[in-house]
View (spheres, helix red, strand yellow):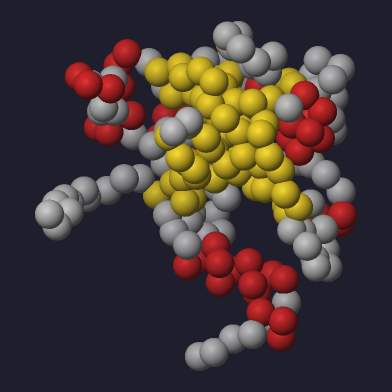
Length: 202
């Protein structure tokens, strides 16, 4: 099949992309509003950008040409925290995806604990074994959209928070204890499952 994205609906485009690009890591992003209200939401359009210096990115859709609370908060404060999603936190991650008024604290709604950060004002999720404090360095909104598009945000990681239980020697992460979850299509998520290794050619 050859499908021109201009000839199908936005929903159909989304189904193809979200069902094809799998598994996707989940960036559980916490922010704070200019009025001091914490916000917490998961984003599966998320990944690492580079390590020299360390940067991560995530993007958020703009349904109905309106910004989500996360986007408003990041654009206002220029800061955010990425908390990594794990098997133990799957229910809380899902709960924090609910559409709630801006004055509602999603930490409370999801049943997780706010913890102070070192360099940014937004709180991190205490229960998450890995969190990245980030400062916004760049954002870009997709052009030629019909329904609001999406905005990509790139943040420089200015502080790592890593639970000692998931850290091995030489700064490697213990995957068996970490147990991250990934996003698939629809309501489906994935665990790591079977892991195999292939050495790169010399």
